[in-house]
Length: 263
Image 1 (cartoon, rainbow, N blue to C red):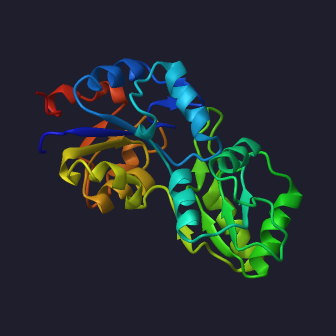
Image 2: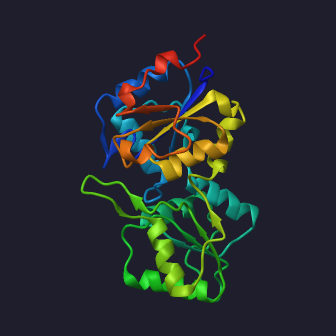
């Protein structure tokens, strides 16, 4: 493996679970951040970027700049602006809707069925049945359909819970529709801000999932370190045609010092 000049960490299942850091995860990331830039990337869009910024800072994780947090939400918002869309029905938790509204006051995030140009589905953990119906009715009328990511489940200390991939299956059964755009991992677009400064082979992504984290690394051409403290277990790795560059029980077990390029 070539020397690493930038590190990207997944959050849920990699650095913490249900908001509780794994042992020595904070200390490990803090130490490595003294030598190379550290970025964070998560598919979880149940909270706003403000929430995740504050969570990382409260945990004591290093966050030199706000743009070090890479989120599917920012990519979705940028794409909405590129398309000059104004009437977007956002299926998301209230604080995420508020964040979207604050980022672009020109957006109408609760348009009528007739006005709706786009339905954007985020990871919504507080919806009621009526909101599901509102999405379905707009999809039936032909509104475009995007999702922030396609994870089937989200990790939780009590066990996996349904995520957007599960919502997608529900809406396909109800309306026959599938999203025309899927942001988030494993879409390699998520790493594009980093690749403006570093070559893919100079980047190490650390995550706990094969079908999102490892798949993203494979598509993007960067290195990958798999931690087994989250969703993936060693039995899941045995039959892979291509193996991760590194496999460790948790982040603190990775020898980053031997991997990074120091001045």
